[in-house]
Amino acid sequence: MKNEYKEALQKQITIYWWNLGTKTLDHKGTYGEFFKKKEIKISEVKHPNNKEYKALKFNMPIGSSRIIFYTSLGSKTAWDYAEMFNNAIKLFLTYLGDKTLFYGNNREFKINWR
Image: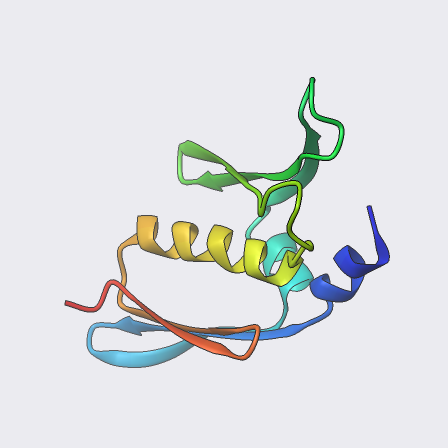
């Protein structure tokens, strides 16, 4: 994959979740470290007919289940890997169901806040 992909994997993120009403640090490090810790596999997928269109496939184990998530910014848009990583992490955290604060790519995401 491209250098931009490797650079995006090195960007810093922070994730907090609430355990019985107490804010707990879940991860402070890079996207790459988070994906490795959670055993999330990433691969590039190409469209069979449109050579310019590419997507990333995230294979995320959660307990005895597995989520397979595809995300793309389309063929005409510059690739923003960090944004695609954010989408996968938000899906992962949403599925877990805990109240979570996720800081990634200079943005704050509040997940499962009621």
